[in-house]
Structure formats: C-alpha cells, structure tokens
Length: 409
Picture 1 (tube, rainbow, N blue to C red):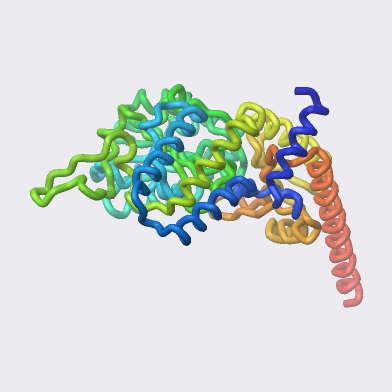
Picture 2 (picture 1 turned 30 degrees about the horizontal axis):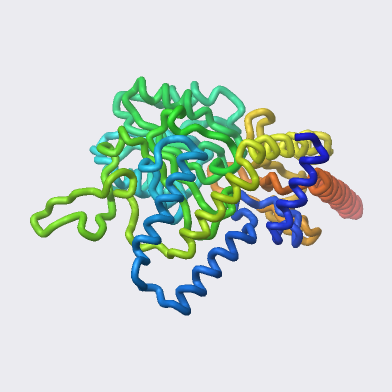
C-alpha cells in the first residue's frame, strides 16, 4: 500500500474512533480507543435486554454461539485452535487462572524478570506465600541485552514455570518467546505469558511460540470493552493446569469433577453478554476492516519514527531499546518527573501515561497506535522538545538563584 492509500485508510478508520479526534491518543497500553461499532453493539445489546428482557427463549444458545465466534476469531488471529481459548475478564484474570491451577510443591521455582507488571507479580507472590514457591528474578536491564543468558542463569531442576511478559510494560521490549520456550523445555518447565501489552500490537503465532499459556487483555490494543480478555492454553497443557473455578453441572455430590471440553474449563459461567458481543465486534473489525498484518507494520513504522525523533532531543533519555520494541516507547525528560511530563502533555492535547513500579524504572510512556498520524507523532515530539527546553531553563535558573544566594552570604 502506497503512502497516499495508507493515509486515506487511516483517515477512514480514524472516523470510526471518535476518541482519536478528541486527543492525540497515545495510551492504548492502558485502554485503546473504542471503535464506534463496539459502542453501538454494546448499547444495542443492552437496549434489547432492557426492552425484551435478559432471559428469553434461546438466549443461552445465542450467547454460546457468540462465544464460539470469539474463539474462532482469536485462533485465526493468534494461532492455535479455537478450543484452546477461554474468554476471561482481563489479563490478570487469565494469569490467576493459570498460576492457581498448577499443582505446586514446596520448593518449586519460578523464573521471571525484574520488569514485570504487578498483574503477574501478584499471582506469583500468592504462590510463594501459599505453597513456598521460590521466585527467581532475572535482571534483564531494559530488555536490549542478552535476555536468554540472564534468564538461563536462574534456571534449575526445580524450575516449574518461566513467567514473563511478551512486551514489557515499562520498557516496551519484545521478549523472544520461541527461544524462551525452547530453553524452558530443556529444564522441563513451561512458559506462562503476560500478553497485556502484546495482543494487538505485535504479531505472534501461539502454536509456533511453544508457550503453555498466553493471557490477554481485551480493552488495550484490541480496542474492546472493559472486563474482557482471553486466555490461550496449549491443549497438551490442559492436564498441567487444572480449573480453579468449577461451573454448573461440572461436579456432583460424590466429589467427581468433569471439566468442560477444551479451554472452556477455565471460564466462569457468568459474563455480561453485551460485552462478549462488543469483544466479538472489536476483533471482527480489527481483522476484517483494519487488518492485523497492516496494523502491526504501521505500529512498528510509527514507533521507529518516534524513537528516532526522541533520540535527537536534548534532555530526553530514551528508555526503550531500538529495534526490539513494538509500539510502547518509554522515555524521561531531565528535570521532570514522569507524572509531570504526562500531565503537561495532556494539557497540550496529547494523552500518554507514566508508569512506576519498584524495582522497575519510573518512565513516561507513549503507546504508538496504528491510528496515529505522522503529524501527531511529530506534534508529540515537538511538545516533548518544548518541555525539555523549559525544564533545562528552569534548572539553569535554579542554579543561578542558588549561586546568588550563596554569594550573598
């Protein structure tokens, strides 16, 4: 697609994302912009429930059919088979399902990295407290170095799981899942992935990746509603990850449990039907109207443009490794807290966010989406440059004032 056709496509698609008109939208790492079709689907379904009632003949079959379609779309986009996907409420929900479903023994070990999100570290800490699991934390810097060597030095015979993000939330680095899975297999361990920041912004073939489990968010890069997500569990790992929640008609009073077929065994029965429809609408729109191959390429191209521009701004430190990221770009402005950078840019009509979670870094973070224009990227760079210049001037003034006070003494 040539540049003119690309610009025409972006303009057409942006018209379906009203939030991208209200602000320079650089925060899909928290919540993606909601497509109009998703909003209309949810509102229409809720209106139908209001008028017709929520329990009408055939409603369970209709909801089940929509869930089937969501599974089919997930498999077509991310690889794997439809029955290997469960519909969840969030990435954290999926990670809890997996980590709580493993039959841990005291002394078992997990290898993770220093840059993980609380959504993964929390469930890991629960296993450490509940079962005496040892958590070994690899320092991988910003993800630009030899990640495999840093991970492997913590592997041991008692390692059961390698748990890490596909895209690190506080540096944007993309982890080499296939290599991690191959390394873990040599130790008899399985790989559990926090995919909150990867699903919908970097390509993956889950079957080829070798991972055991991959937990995704619906509301971030997939532009779906809140309270939606998906969990991929490789079929060969169903026996290693037991259901934590037992649903209707899956057990009897004698204590026998018969899990539902496939990854549905990991789902809770209760789900808000309009949100399931909204999730289906979002995935369908991204697949059929936007195109995942196209959006992956565009995100990478725009992120490179932004990274190159940041590198030229005096007073800005880039915290993301070039060549190893998707659309998350992290940086700091000398003399300003990341929270101040985020707030100042929002006042200028540009929405980013800042992240901080010890022992990881505190950074300003821009999520570069396929919906962003080249002009918006350049505008964001211009405002960051202005902030850096103002911060430098303020620091110089403060130094001068301090020197004058000292001289007066």
